Length: 452
Image (cartoon, rainbow, N blue to C red):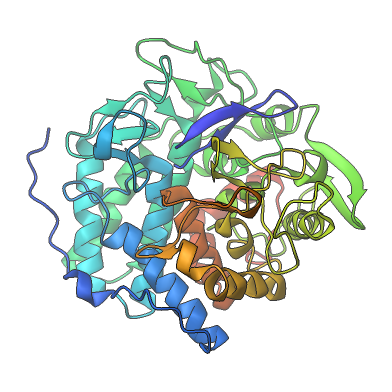
């Protein structure tokens, strides 16, 4: 289940998972992306990577909500809300996964474009708050489902993850036919309507996570780094219509007691963030489209940050100081996921023996050999316990002989996207081609190899 929790330094971190009377979205039958459940131990690395991407894509393409097309929060019920809960951030990851499916020929281009156009039309009528989206929607009506009692309005971080995906879609569907032109135009409308400057709370030099029409700023949560919210500042600075100043980045995001680190763990220097790096989704969610290649500012080299974070997480699992069953060089990866006790943000400083496949698999660009070893172990050794119709289930804990039977949108999406970024750089190339992103990065003094 998706929830927001306090980590040790006291910052609230998003652990997202994850009306209109429209008919169900018409898609190709399920057989176009077949389910392959039988384990093939002799499969080649390239064929295995293909299989994992393709089968995981089914979560968004076949299991997407039948009216809105939005990604369901999880494959089992979300609290007591039933199966109508769709997730804003997880949908952002999902539309990027659909771009991968089109690029690889698993989904026809015009079929995907029609599907995505109907989704953005639905979003245009759904609840929004100063242009930003809530964390959860009712997948048919477009009404906000409260994430918590006072979290019943805008969620700026979830909105960032959705817009990262939509901007990537806009850059991919660049055809001059009416369908793709309309898709781009409607995405531009959603993007341009977000009042990023509103979320500085009357001009304070920091962004705020939540605003509610019922509770105002009662959540009172400023976004300070370093964590998964990096992308939010990039997008806020990139807006043409409602931008924030560079001071919001340098005096808000950067000014916190847990921004700088500079310590060494297992021989790897960690420029920013919590000791040992925190859960691995910090190096995934903001960087599905935002490429860390050559991404540098006065504070860090973000490729080094993300790669060393991944290597520290790997090294900790190999070291296995708590002696959990199964931890090894081919069985590693700590991040937010379901676990035997519910849901938690797992990391070297918050470890209960739960391995989440999304952690190692979404680290493919940073640790390709180590991620491939983990992928093969998950598939060939544990496949009968964790491999299913939407790819790998969410997590497992061998010490407790526990295996999740759930899939979560925010864990499935990064697997597809980051494997593709490792293979071809597709999503990085698309997102970084957006002119707004170039302007935003330059404004904040962030260099990139994409912009010389």
